[in-house]
Image 1 (cartoon, protein in one colour):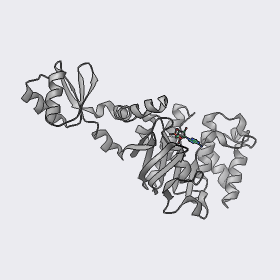
Image 2 (tube, helix red, strand yellow):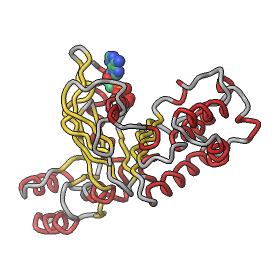
Image 3 (tube, helix red, strand yellow):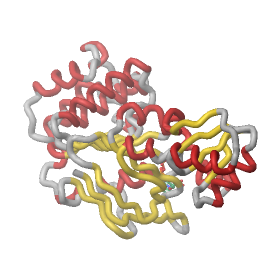
Image 4 (cartoon, protein in one colour):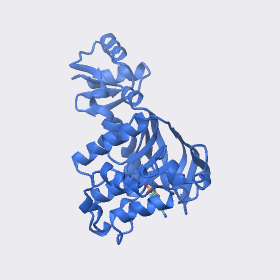
Amino acid sequence: MIEVSHLSRTYGGLHAVDDVTFTARPGRVTGFLGPNGAGKSTTMRVMVGLTPASSGSATVLGRHYADLPNPGREVGVLLDASAQHAGRTGRETLRIAALTMGLPTARTDEMIDLVGLTPTEASRRVKNYSLGMRQRLGIATALIGDPEVLILDEPANGLDPAGIRWMRDLLRGFADQGGTVLLSSHLLHEIEVIADDLVVIGQGRIVAQGTKAELLAAAGTLVRSTATTELSQALTASGVTVSRSGPDLLRVDAEPDLVGKVALAAGVALTELRAADGAGLEEMFLDLTADTAREGVAA
Ligand code: ADP
């Protein structure tokens, strides 16, 4: 369990993380989604004690990370795969992690196997690793202490499609055994296939959170008509929010049933009416983050 409560972190005048509250639960994969610069890494750095909070708190298994007696045995962390010691081999990196955590060094070879590095690759220096190999090594380091919680910042960066699939299965298995997984990404599709719960962040603030199913349902209804102006007026008059998704297409924050009834009452013919979840989380992600992302670029 990870609990983040009213967490804020400012850098000078910049609100990198602004009053963020969410929980990542055991047995579930929680996706932490947002455009670059949204505040994901800062939140995760506060969680593992690398950056102090300006206010609010983040606890892992009910404690601040710094108060965990042997943190590597409780929380597996991968924040920046390219920050691993370049002069060490993969095997040395894992052996040092095992020694630090008081684990038998046999765990080293188990982890090398688990993450699919060959013995030859494990004997090479990290400076010669691709980003994907560094991610695998980082995941091995995170898992070596057999923790209950995983905190992974953009773990899919640099992995090829087969690697992403492998990671997805690994994290699914970890959560299915009762583990808590928090992983961040700026790519919706990466998160969409793996996460049970989603926390969406833009410019330091949470813009949506809930189960993936809830967030999909919240995408509303897509309705197509050649008379979108009349339809939009009738829907707005009935108290629902309408936005334009294309030349003849509206997105409505209401069930298809209601939209159909309003159209009938207004005498507007429809050419298409369907729940917007077919459009996936994508529309929601773009809707929710487009403005904040744009402002971020302009700032
Ligand atoms: P994300 O992980 O979502 O890409 P970050 O948490 O890295 O976002 O960054 C959030 C914001 O905080 C960005 O505007 C970034 O430039 C800023 N930021 C992050 N770390 C620092 C720092 N050490 N000093 C100043 N600004 C920072």
